[in-house]
Image (cartoon, rainbow, N blue to C red; front, top):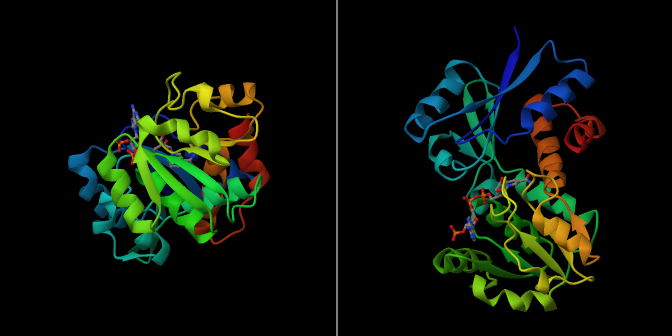
Length: 265
Ligand SMILES: NC(=O)c1ccc[n+]([C@@H]2O[C@H](COP(=O)([O-])OP(=O)(O)OC[C@H]3O[C@@H](n4cnc5c(N)ncnc54)[C@H](OP(=O)(O)O)[C@@H]3O)[C@@H](O)[C@H]2O)c1
């Protein structure tokens, strides 16, 4: 009988995790032992879905929008990093005990650190939701200087207070011209040809990281390329957070090149 891993969210249509993890199971010859599925879970069914994880002995679960925070109250244990971030994107079921982890922060850091040393860099972080929280946590650990820009100023303020960084309103985006790294951690651009940043503020010396991975070439990425900026794609964060998830689910070293190929193709 196969061990089940599952992605949940609402909606879940855009998830590339099943493709990536099933390719990895196949590469390691464990596709007869593991299968990765996805399920759309309505908010009123979330608690039952988590109970079902124990009931059906589902080994691992990836949690996406909008459940990364609310899910925490249904788990038996929360890992220290996830607790500090205040969001869980990965659940592991070990002998009926559910532990929540966050692999978004390591995924984002690994993707960024392939391009740039973060210590002392000035970072404009656009967004103050779940992805932004994970990224601020990682950047703070690495000694970057962060300013948060968000549509809802209260959420920016809360996040900035938790991690002792600056914040401001989205209408002051012109400030990003002085920054080294610009990160879009909003959902703007997801399945729509929109960018959260006017291209007149993009510069050749910027490193532009768009966490949105569907489509791969977002409007922001296209315009940043036109300006000659260095790019970090959302799929790279997805890859590295997925590698960490795979290792938590299986206890085996992930076949990273196979996983990368499924996302790049
Ligand atoms: N690449 C990866 O591995 C990875 C991992 C995690 C997430 N993501 C992606 O990251 C994105 C955000 O996810 P999340 O979990 O952080 O979502 P979330 O918690 O719902 O936060 C959404 C953020 O986007 C902002 N926003 C939404 N619509 C906006 C608009 N029209 N104009 C300006 N700001 C807007 C929100 O601002 P307000 O506070 O004002 O509402 C908030 O800051 C999604 O596209 C998700 O797929 C990618």
